[in-house]
Every structure is written in structure tokens, then in C-alpha cells.
Image (cartoon, rainbow, N blue to C red; front, side, top):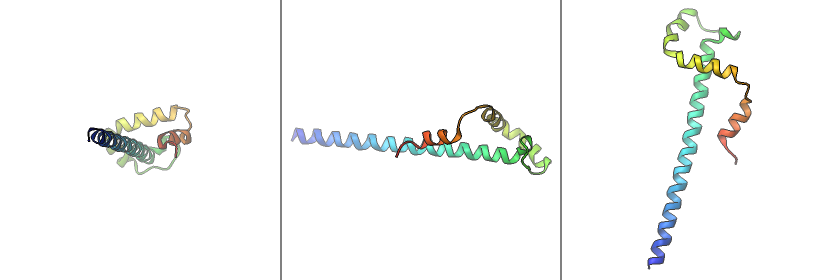
Length: 95
């Protein structure tokens, strides 16, 4: 009887660990997607800096104080010479 409880305890621990690992992976992918959406939104608003048509200037100026962090991230990302495809593949993991 004691061995059976030990086996059930091990199986329960495995299932809990597997669940936590899948939650972590899903959460990290969602965080990455949110970051990419924020970058895309920032690029849409302030695309004039890189030659992309942007919304009217009053709209951009009104949103600028709220987007200070995003603008800094966009500048940092532009200065990094990483490969975006390899970054995406590393976030998604292996099949």
C-alpha cells in the first residue's frame, strides 16, 4: 500500500511539474508577442524616423509622453544586429 502511495505521489509531482513548464512556455510566448505588437505599434506611430508614412503629427506628439519606454526600446532594437528569425525560433522552442 505504501509503495502505491509513493507511485501516485511521483505521478502527481510529474503532472504538476509538466503543467508548470507548459504554463511558463505559454507565458513567455505571449510576453514575446506583446513585445512585438508594442514594437509594431511604435513603428507605426513614429515610422517617419525610418521613412515609413506615419499618422498626423499632432497624434504622434500627443502619444509621445506615454510611449517613452517604447521609443527607447525601438532605438535599442534598431541598433542591435541580431537575426529576428533566429530570435523567434529560440522563443518558440523545438517541436
